[in-house]
Length: 211
Length: 375
Image 1: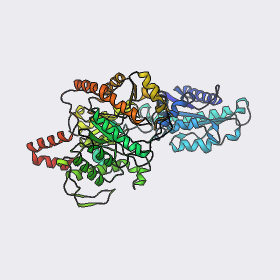
Image 2 (image 1 turned 120 degrees about the vertical axis):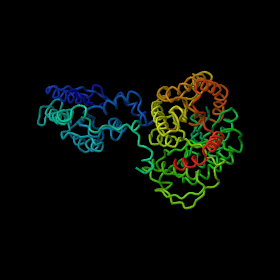
Image 3 (image 1 turned 90 degrees about the vertical axis):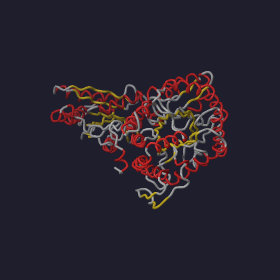
Image 4 (image 1 turned 60 degrees about the vertical axis):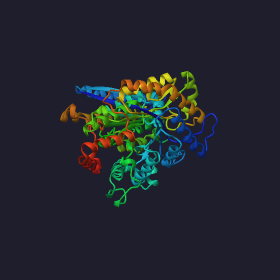
């Protein structure tokens, strides 16, 4: 079957090492899925071109069309890969803004892989102290391995090599996706079917009774 | 169909001069704007309600009574009355009094308010916003419809043998609209009672308005008040006009760019495309406004926001002249020609009195029982 994987990247420079890490992660996830006769449809959500739209959404309370499309892609995906540069000991403001404008339940139950880049490895624990709590709050299911890439990692084969961390994280993400196919089938694979409050309205007598 | 204006009473500096009107000026200007609205032939003037700076929109019935004393014809309304944080007993008394003073030229729009701290300031909890709107309005309806009320609820001290005075004019409560940008529960509430539903239709894309109105119409029919296209719908809207559309854009842009709510965000062009805001010639305003009907159906009330973001009084009065002379007469004619006969006109005090009398003539006892059940 086909799994959709939304890859959110908040890199700012072009070319961007954050985007490079996001590409390597999405390749690793895709190749694992296709090795088992599944397909991966990667939806890349690059936040830099959405910077203005995100600021507009903060001000007006609604997403402009291009941002609405990106938000839908993330909400509807089977899995999320979220990659940010580390700024001032945490995720970047642009990265956080994207998750700020999502509905608070939008990521509930979604298999998620978190990753980050920075100039040196001294920033690596920002993944554990900043990104992991953010996605825990959003009730995403975050894989145990968070992937950090310092600039030097792109040219290193030393202990704890970047490639190995990518592979391990991708294995963990695919392990979260697979049972959904095997046990519940594609139609039941979403965590909880979303109730549309405009179609399925709470009847007024219930509201009157305080329910 | 009714046409009018609504104001939120913001005190905002004019970006050209950096000067904000004093509260006194803004309050007096609001009166001048309301009188002008009647003079140019508009049907409705509605004021918002806020309890914090930079607004002068507290004490709405004081404002509306002062306007009522100086006008003859225009309907006085609210946009919105805070049903969550205002004691329903005070709403019942204040608006019944206003009905008498204005000879029935009153209706109201219920809303929940948009300033978080207003809840704790009035001893309420914002997390109870919907339950407060539901319980308080249920009590308000009884206070207007039953001479003696025994009542106990969750949010207010109980009432035993309470009579709200004065009783509504001619025994008929003011018509009520319910306003909400995005809460389906409020559309459901309006539908349940067969009240009107008003969509702000300014700050968000038209698709949100369409979704809310569709829900309200469907549920209005479900509760047996008539067919979906007979539900009572009102829309907001925001316009700025000059004879030439380029002049309108040039003049309005500095106000748009720093306006409360959406200022410093999207460009004027983006916001015009994404929301119902129309900045251009009177012809463009007519065309856009007629288009609203395509996604909400035939509707009963159109209110425009024309006096915010620091626009000077002179400019606002010019906008009202254009609305009254060039826009509304055309809209009245065009909308009337499009409206099927079975779609009702907007309710007024006179039409509600006539409907009550017609009901009483056909089945007087039955009517009382239905009324008691409906609350």
